[in-house]
View 1 (spheres, rainbow, N blue to C red):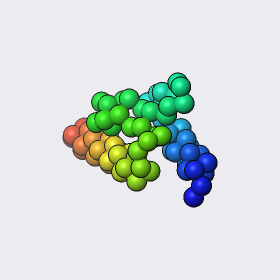
View 2 (view 1 turned 90 degrees about the vertical axis):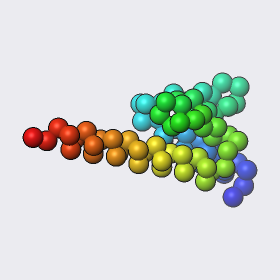
View 3 (view 1 turned 135 degrees about the horizontal axis):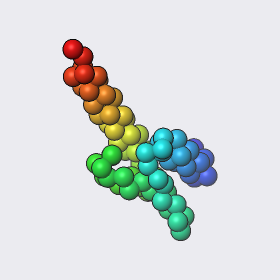
View 4 (view 1 turned 30 degrees about the vertical axis):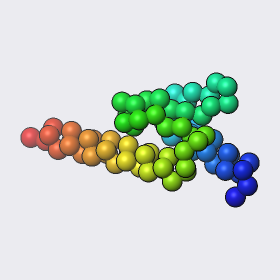
Amino acid sequence: MTEQEEYAVRFFIALAHEEGKCLIYGDDGEIQCNNISRHGRCIDFKRESITDILNTLKATHFREYAEKIEVSTNERP
């Protein structure tokens, strides 16, 4: 993968992850999500490995899904 292709992948991962719950900081050429309360840390889409980024996003989604299941289970009579 060329450097330009890798940047495009990182950019699209950052945009796709937002889902209305995060705001991407993109000033000065940065691509970061600072929603620590959601992800447990800042995600630097420009400098971190793509594998680390995807692992963080997967962990976030698994945790959020588990929380939804727990809430729906607790709401049952």
